[in-house]
Length: 292
Image (tube, rainbow, N blue to C red; front, side, top):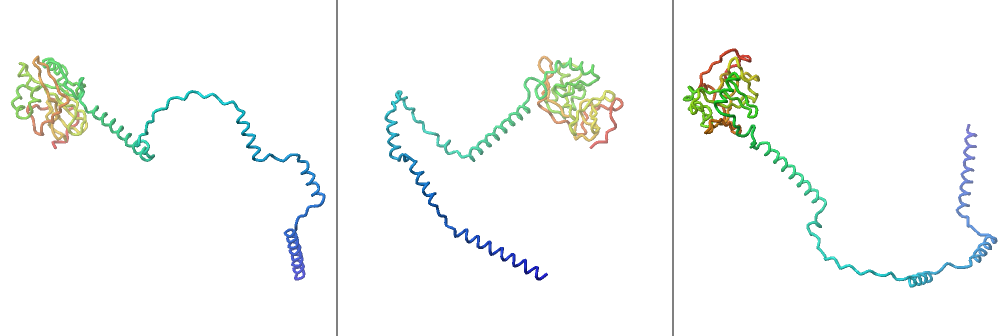
């Protein structure tokens, strides 16, 4: 094994020495042209009959070509345009300022549009409907409609209930209600009729549910949480904090009832019972959970 290893090392050494000598000869080699090659180069130069033009010759040829051209006819010059200096503010607007101004403008436009929409939504309608004054009709006709509808007349355009208010309870009502409410309630006495009219807002003052009538009990009964009110909207039981809210009313010279649905008056406090009306029949919903 030792002899084999020595032989391999010797062969490798010889190969390395030969490669180094060949590399050295390549680096030290100097190229030399033979006599025949130099002779062919001289003959090739003699074949070039003309040398390339010099720079002066090129410039001279270009000048002669320009002088040979026919000058073009010139048109009459237009009058000079007056100078308008640019706006310094426009020139000075940077990209950041442009984007900032654009954002501010868009935000202002959005807020303005939102404000106009809110005002349009909240503004009372002058052409009739909820939020405006509604001419319901002659008090005598309204009383007849109430009685034809089992004691309760609903007006969807005003979101209101219209019921009778007995003349015998006017004295108690004068102590509890405001003049704008009493205008419709005392219309019976003023016009020589047997009852006046009260205009009630349809929403329950507890959580805003629409309160329907109950024909059997002749009361209003809220289906959401069981609050109950007598025929003129005074609270009798349930979790509501007060009686049903009502609208301001007025009676014209010709005996017409006008209800201002844009003026909502807070309902009477708990314990108010000017008419003394008790339930006249079975309730339409389960018994209320008691006074709160």
